[in-house]
Length: 210
Image 1 (cartoon, rainbow, N blue to C red):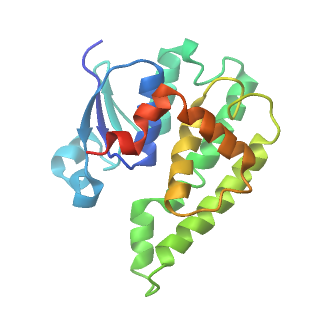
Image 2 (tube, rainbow, N blue to C red):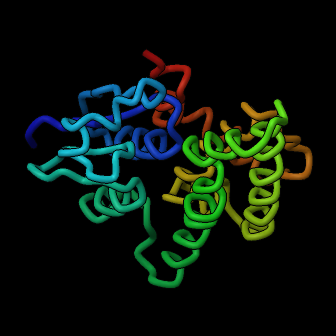
């Protein structure tokens, strides 16, 4: 395999997901930091690589891949033994539903460019914090219900799947913004288990911060 390169921002939830996936699969990669706060994602050079101007971008197998879930699904199909997506079609749908509940329902409305625009529309100093707390807590409550009392140590079964790769970065964001986690018993348990796994630990923002 030729050199694998991840264009990444250390605090990006989407980048965090892909870092975990690469670590779980044991794929060595080089990181190229893309500082979102400094506008590095808006340069002509980066836009030529990723026209959306988003992170992450993964260069692997001579291909340039964008969108974190599409990247993770590519890796899952590249290494089906990883279990990132279950082989059974019904089980796979459940994992995708859990992953999408985070990545498509919570993450987009709590993204940096959304909250930056919010702050241009209000004079309330704590508007960003209250926005984050409201939407993250509401979203995690629904994910908690979706997980329910399902058997297994993780969101679906006894090994991490794409759903866990989406959930754990969102839990990091929840704690960062001071979301009360008491009501999310299963999520807190799953987060604690994942934190003990080297692949998750190595991908944590505190470990990769430039």
